[in-house]
Image 1 (cartoon, rainbow, N blue to C red):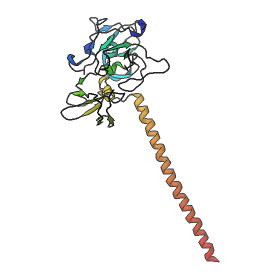
Image 2 (tube, helix red, strand yellow; image 1 turned 135 degrees about the vertical axis):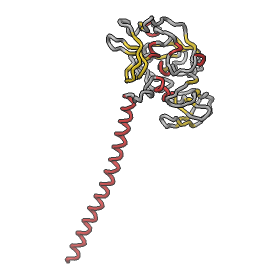
Image 3 (cartoon, rainbow, N blue to C red; image 1 turned 90 degrees about the vertical axis):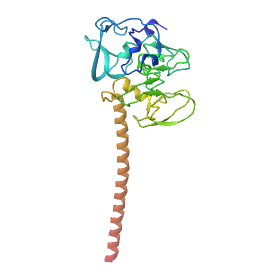
Image 4 (cartoon, rainbow, N blue to C red; image 1 turned 60 degrees about the vertical axis):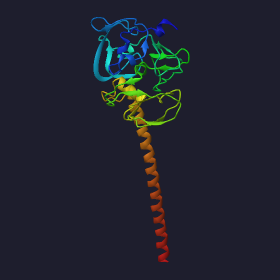
Length: 275
């Protein structure tokens, strides 16, 4: 592994997100490489020419580290506008015993995705990995820093009043309906992308990890739909509208044919009556 692909400047790794559970539930991380200065600024390897300062704005931005969207907390360059998610800027060099990947104990930070032109996908949310990620050297398991910021137990007041626990992947299939996307997902052993589920034990509220991700990156809290999701919704709407017009067109065509046949038949009857 080259030094450029695995370096990261990190501060307190247990403060990756204000919505994370208490420190005992956050996966243990490796030693820190750097600290914020007294002004709350850092020098990050991905943008060494300028210092990055901590901000909290309610509008959408594109993180230049993981290449995913976010809102709210971020580190930003005031000279050129370069921005990083807070959890990307503070990502540690490695994670140990992460609940999303119990098979192997170590996940290493990488600045570039594996596979070159064959882009890999995050094993938690199922989206493409375009930049920063944590990867298992033993099996290739890969996840975004935002997904890595989620823990075994989370408090997400924007979604639910009770703490949510990660559902154990015990091999038994169970249809669980996510209360955000309203899709049922069968849990299977191995926790394949999109099948990781959080659940409220007292009341049964369920939430996909991929949906909880938008609560960690600030999008849900600020009511923002990321552009790629809007595009997907628009594409689905276009397909629906086209299908609807196709059905209506068929009905109109059928009605037109029926009227035409009736008209021709009436003309024929009229001619026969005059004879």
